[in-house]
Figure 1 (cartoon, rainbow over the protein chains, first blue to last red):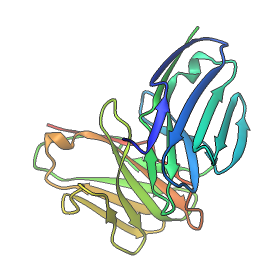
Figure 2 (tube, each protein chain N blue to C red; figure 1 turned 60 degrees about the vertical axis):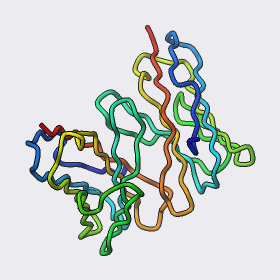
Figure 3 (cartoon, rainbow over the protein chains, first blue to last red; figure 1 turned 60 degrees about the horizontal axis):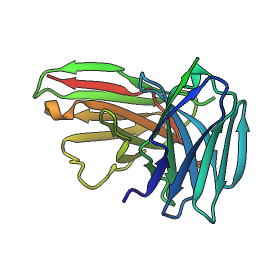
Length: 108
Length: 116
Protein backbone atom coordinates (compact mmCIF):
# COMPACT_ATOMS: atom_id res chain seq x y z
CA UNK A 1 0.00 0.00 0.00
CA UNK A 2 1.32 3.39 -0.99
CA UNK A 3 2.12 5.77 1.85
CA UNK A 4 0.22 8.50 0.00
CA UNK A 5 -3.20 7.89 -1.52
CA UNK A 6 -4.95 10.37 -3.78
CA UNK A 7 -8.50 10.46 -5.05
CA UNK A 8 -9.94 10.65 -7.54
CA UNK A 9 -7.45 9.32 -10.08
CA UNK A 10 -9.12 11.27 -12.87
CA UNK A 11 -11.52 14.16 -12.79
CA UNK A 12 -13.37 15.98 -15.56
CA UNK A 13 -15.18 19.23 -14.84
CA UNK A 14 -16.97 21.93 -16.77
CA UNK A 15 -15.49 25.38 -16.72
CA UNK A 16 -16.59 27.22 -13.60
CA UNK A 17 -17.14 24.14 -11.45
CA UNK A 18 -15.64 23.65 -8.01
CA UNK A 19 -13.04 20.88 -7.88
CA UNK A 20 -11.76 18.95 -4.86
CA UNK A 21 -8.84 16.53 -4.79
CA UNK A 22 -8.15 14.49 -1.68
CA UNK A 23 -4.93 13.12 -0.24
CA UNK A 24 -4.51 10.72 2.66
CA UNK A 25 -1.20 9.57 4.07
CA UNK A 26 -0.15 6.96 6.57
CA UNK A 27 3.20 8.19 7.89
CA UNK A 28 4.37 10.99 10.12
CA UNK A 29 5.25 14.07 8.13
CA UNK A 30 6.83 17.45 8.64
CA UNK A 31 4.98 19.06 5.73
CA UNK A 32 2.86 18.32 2.68
CA UNK A 33 3.17 19.71 -0.85
CA UNK A 34 0.57 20.07 -3.53
CA UNK A 35 2.28 20.00 -6.92
CA UNK A 36 1.02 20.75 -10.40
CA UNK A 37 2.49 18.97 -13.42
CA UNK A 38 1.59 20.13 -16.92
CA UNK A 39 1.79 17.90 -20.03
CA UNK A 40 5.32 19.09 -20.77
CA UNK A 41 6.40 17.57 -17.47
CA UNK A 42 7.50 20.60 -15.49
CA UNK A 43 6.45 20.63 -11.86
CA UNK A 44 5.33 23.62 -9.85
CA UNK A 45 4.85 23.54 -6.11
CA UNK A 46 1.47 25.13 -5.46
CA UNK A 47 1.44 24.91 -1.68
CA UNK A 48 3.49 23.65 1.20
CA UNK A 49 1.41 23.02 4.31
CA UNK A 50 2.16 21.88 7.81
CA UNK A 51 -1.17 22.93 9.35
CA UNK A 52 -4.41 24.70 8.64
CA UNK A 53 -5.28 26.25 5.34
CA UNK A 54 -3.64 28.26 2.59
CA UNK A 55 -5.16 30.19 -0.29
CA UNK A 56 -3.61 31.47 -3.48
CA UNK A 57 -5.92 32.93 -6.05
CA UNK A 58 -8.53 30.32 -6.92
CA UNK A 59 -6.64 27.54 -5.17
CA UNK A 60 -7.20 26.52 -1.57
CA UNK A 61 -5.33 23.79 0.30
CA UNK A 62 -6.21 22.41 3.70
CA UNK A 63 -4.59 19.86 5.94
CA UNK A 64 -5.77 17.98 9.02
CA UNK A 65 -2.71 16.57 10.74
CA UNK A 66 -4.71 14.45 13.20
CA UNK A 67 -6.68 12.78 10.42
CA UNK A 68 -3.65 12.65 8.08
CA UNK A 69 -5.65 14.15 5.29
CA UNK A 70 -5.31 17.09 2.94
CA UNK A 71 -7.52 18.56 0.23
CA UNK A 72 -6.85 20.82 -2.73
CA UNK A 73 -9.75 22.87 -3.98
CA UNK A 74 -9.99 24.77 -7.25
CA UNK A 75 -12.76 27.35 -7.36
CA UNK A 76 -14.25 28.60 -10.63
CA UNK A 77 -12.19 26.08 -12.61
CA UNK A 78 -10.79 27.04 -15.99
CA UNK A 79 -9.39 24.97 -18.88
CA UNK A 80 -5.91 26.23 -18.04
CA UNK A 81 -6.24 24.39 -14.71
CA UNK A 82 -6.06 21.12 -16.66
CA UNK A 83 -3.00 19.30 -15.34
CA UNK A 84 -1.91 16.49 -13.07
CA UNK A 85 -2.07 17.43 -9.40
CA UNK A 86 0.23 15.52 -7.09
CA UNK A 87 0.22 15.32 -3.32
CA UNK A 88 3.64 14.78 -1.77
CA UNK A 89 4.48 14.38 1.90
CA UNK A 90 7.77 15.40 3.47
CA UNK A 91 9.26 12.95 5.94
CA UNK A 92 11.30 14.00 8.92
CA UNK A 93 14.48 13.52 6.84
CA UNK A 94 13.05 15.86 4.17
CA UNK A 95 12.42 13.16 1.57
CA UNK A 96 9.26 13.40 -0.51
CA UNK A 97 6.82 10.54 -1.04
CA UNK A 98 4.39 11.10 -3.85
CA UNK A 99 0.81 10.20 -4.51
CA UNK A 100 -0.09 8.76 -7.89
CA UNK A 101 -1.53 12.07 -9.04
CA UNK A 102 -4.97 13.23 -10.12
CA UNK A 103 -5.48 14.09 -13.76
CA UNK A 104 -7.80 17.07 -13.98
CA UNK A 105 -9.46 18.03 -17.24
CA UNK A 106 -11.56 21.19 -17.35
CA UNK A 107 -13.74 21.57 -20.41
CA UNK A 108 -14.82 24.93 -21.78
CA UNK B 1 10.67 33.18 -6.63
CA UNK B 2 13.33 30.52 -6.42
CA UNK B 3 14.33 29.01 -9.75
CA UNK B 4 15.87 25.65 -10.48
CA UNK B 5 17.16 24.89 -13.95
CA UNK B 6 18.04 21.62 -15.60
CA UNK B 7 20.18 21.01 -18.62
CA UNK B 8 19.61 19.53 -21.08
CA UNK B 9 15.84 19.47 -21.31
CA UNK B 10 15.92 16.72 -23.92
CA UNK B 11 18.58 14.16 -24.74
CA UNK B 12 18.64 11.26 -27.15
CA UNK B 13 21.61 8.95 -26.99
CA UNK B 14 22.79 5.56 -28.17
CA UNK B 15 22.77 2.57 -25.88
CA UNK B 16 26.04 2.26 -23.99
CA UNK B 17 26.86 5.95 -23.84
CA UNK B 18 26.84 8.10 -20.72
CA UNK B 19 24.64 11.12 -20.23
CA UNK B 20 25.15 13.95 -17.77
CA UNK B 21 22.24 16.01 -16.48
CA UNK B 22 22.82 19.24 -14.58
CA UNK B 23 20.60 20.75 -11.91
CA UNK B 24 21.25 24.33 -10.82
CA UNK B 25 19.66 26.54 -8.22
CA UNK B 26 19.81 29.95 -9.85
CA UNK B 27 19.08 32.37 -7.05
CA UNK B 28 19.62 30.46 -3.83
CA UNK B 29 22.05 28.08 -2.23
CA UNK B 30 20.92 24.50 -1.88
CA UNK B 31 22.65 22.26 0.60
CA UNK B 32 20.43 19.41 -0.50
CA UNK B 33 19.20 18.44 -3.94
CA UNK B 34 17.03 15.49 -4.85
CA UNK B 35 16.87 13.45 -8.03
CA UNK B 36 13.64 11.82 -9.16
CA UNK B 37 12.63 9.62 -12.05
CA UNK B 38 9.20 9.44 -13.60
CA UNK B 39 8.08 6.78 -16.05
CA UNK B 40 5.10 7.47 -18.32
CA UNK B 41 1.80 7.71 -16.49
CA UNK B 42 3.50 6.99 -13.17
CA UNK B 43 4.32 9.18 -10.23
CA UNK B 44 7.74 10.46 -9.34
CA UNK B 45 10.13 8.17 -7.55
CA UNK B 46 12.99 9.46 -5.47
CA UNK B 47 16.30 8.12 -6.73
CA UNK B 48 18.79 9.79 -4.45
CA UNK B 49 19.49 12.64 -2.10
CA UNK B 50 22.48 14.77 -2.97
CA UNK B 51 24.24 16.73 -0.23
CA UNK B 52 26.85 19.33 -1.06
CA UNK B 53 30.35 18.11 -0.31
CA UNK B 54 29.40 14.56 0.60
CA UNK B 55 28.33 11.32 -1.02
CA UNK B 56 24.80 10.98 -2.28
CA UNK B 57 22.32 8.74 -0.50
CA UNK B 58 20.59 6.34 -2.86
CA UNK B 59 17.15 4.84 -2.45
CA UNK B 60 16.73 1.09 -2.38
CA UNK B 61 16.98 -0.44 -5.82
CA UNK B 62 18.88 2.47 -7.38
CA UNK B 63 22.36 1.50 -8.54
CA UNK B 64 24.87 4.07 -7.35
CA UNK B 65 27.46 2.97 -9.93
CA UNK B 66 24.99 3.48 -12.73
CA UNK B 67 23.57 6.80 -11.58
CA UNK B 68 26.54 8.89 -10.49
CA UNK B 69 25.68 11.99 -8.52
CA UNK B 70 28.04 14.85 -7.82
CA UNK B 71 27.08 17.89 -5.73
CA UNK B 72 30.26 19.91 -5.91
CA UNK B 73 28.83 23.31 -5.05
CA UNK B 74 25.83 24.81 -3.29
CA UNK B 75 24.20 25.59 -6.63
CA UNK B 76 25.00 22.58 -8.81
CA UNK B 77 24.30 18.87 -8.72
CA UNK B 78 24.89 16.53 -11.62
CA UNK B 79 23.41 13.13 -12.41
CA UNK B 80 25.33 10.96 -14.84
CA UNK B 81 23.57 7.94 -16.31
CA UNK B 82 26.44 5.64 -17.16
CA UNK B 83 26.25 3.07 -19.96
CA UNK B 84 22.67 4.02 -20.63
CA UNK B 85 20.23 1.38 -21.86
CA UNK B 86 16.74 1.76 -23.34
CA UNK B 87 15.16 0.91 -19.98
CA UNK B 88 16.82 4.05 -18.57
CA UNK B 89 14.65 6.15 -20.86
CA UNK B 90 12.60 8.28 -18.52
CA UNK B 91 11.89 11.78 -17.28
CA UNK B 92 14.46 12.88 -14.71
CA UNK B 93 13.59 15.74 -12.38
CA UNK B 94 15.66 17.42 -9.71
CA UNK B 95 14.58 19.53 -6.80
CA UNK B 96 16.56 21.76 -4.50
CA UNK B 97 16.05 22.79 -0.90
CA UNK B 98 17.31 26.19 0.20
CA UNK B 99 19.86 25.81 2.96
CA UNK B 100 18.10 25.62 6.30
CA UNK B 101 14.64 25.14 4.77
CA UNK B 102 14.49 21.38 4.46
CA UNK B 103 10.75 21.05 3.87
CA UNK B 104 10.80 23.51 0.97
CA UNK B 105 11.68 22.10 -2.41
CA UNK B 106 11.82 23.86 -5.75
CA UNK B 107 11.62 21.66 -8.80
CA UNK B 108 13.55 21.81 -12.02
CA UNK B 109 11.75 21.57 -15.35
CA UNK B 110 12.95 18.01 -15.94
CA UNK B 111 15.10 16.24 -18.50
CA UNK B 112 13.60 13.76 -20.89
CA UNK B 113 16.06 10.98 -21.75
CA UNK B 114 15.57 8.63 -24.66
CA UNK B 115 18.08 5.85 -25.10
CA UNK B 116 18.00 4.16 -28.48
